[in-house]
Image 1: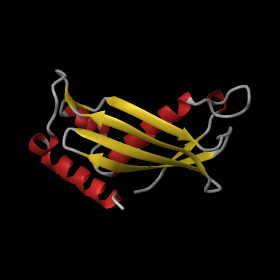
Image 2 (image 1 turned 60 degrees about the vertical axis):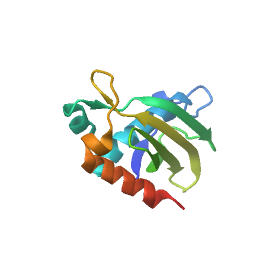
Image 3 (image 1 turned 90 degrees about the vertical axis):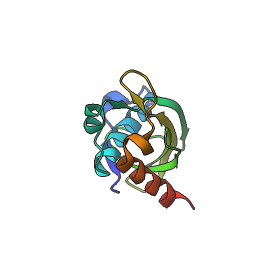
Image 4 (image 1 turned 90 degrees about the horizontal axis):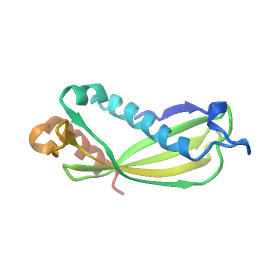
Length: 139
């Protein structure tokens, strides 16, 4: 898996010259979309199948400030997968290899009518990929 690279834009910074905390959540979304592409399950593919994955929980730990024009490299991993819910982990590093932020998001999978998608039964190939990634991420 290749880390997702985001270059900090000027508009993402505040008066102190550092990235405003709300932008890290946007970067997580960018990295998640890239992660799905890398594993062969693009968001557009899931949406075409009538599947969405809304965020149900978020947690961020800010370790050091990110600043304008800095490249941030975001690694995404599957921390837990239970067939209906998934927990993703994010590690954000700057070009010096310093941790900027550690985060996690939790998502469920829903049909367009709002009912839960049971991936193992309805999308077994996708479920299998997520299971393998979750097992590989275990210590």
